[in-house]
Image (cartoon, rainbow over all chains, first blue to last red; front, side, top):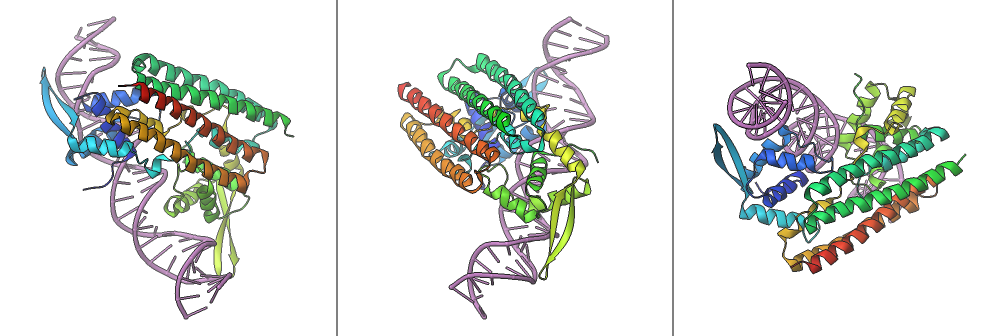
Length: 179
Length: 179
DNA sequence: CCGCTCATGTAACTGGTTACATGATTTA
DNA sequence: TAAATCATGTAACCAGTTACATGAGCGG
């Protein structure tokens, strides 16, 4: 079966590659810790996923017994490593070349459905909401941000937040001017 | 059935609200025109979706015959309007408060899986890829960007692109410095 | 009249969701 | 020892995907 690995699958291969031999549960924790809420990291997603990847030969597992409990530790096979590199690129995959999806932007598209005063309250609420995002990024940074490549991810989050704030303030100006 | 409308469902309600009575096909075109690739706007997604929304009382339809062909024109019901406003907020829904998902950032997380020269090539390729995104935003702007609220969306795209470029250049510096 | 786009759908699949189950291990 | 959390899963569901089908209308 030579289907290209999905975004989540590839990401999981990456996580396993990064954390050496690790369990599905470890993968779930890494996904949960990540500030992105793109994936829920639910057991129902991850356990079947790693099985799938093993069946395709991208991951391999050995069972390690600790106490009475058997743990299944996954690591990346050479084919998995190739798949990872292929996913990362270059070339950059078509589906990676996108405008990022911002739920706030989506909602702003229909701001006219609100009354003027509500629009302003919406902007304020959004600015406040971004503080929650900020602390999520911060928390992740404190945990993993030592390493220079990891720090780049935090930096991305910071810059993104900055720009969303700037944008929201522009939205506010527009809202205030409009009738 | 009082389940909260999904992100796509709510967005579609918004589109129908914006474009007055319109067909499922119109919705699909609006989604296709949007620079975001979050949704494929496939027929298999949209036709069942609007039916669903009609069954829930958020949309209503009347059939209009033009020539021999029957078109089903949807419009938003008062309940749909309420649902739309509820989705937009305030308060901002939990699931809207997120770090946006950026496939390039995801990939950058595993840049160490590449050789140094490939990392640099990756950054260059990413910068080039963003040009495609830029033209997509530009195209949308030319079509719909007259109206001030629509223009804000383009502005968001512009700012986002700027920041992603800035960030990629920082990545390049990090890559160049690293062993 | 041919081919393209308009327009409306259906069918099969699939990847991810929520919710549940279960037992081991740790901590209060 | 009771409660919490670690750890591994399964089952049912569902929304969105690709792929296909069908026919109208229109421009060359």
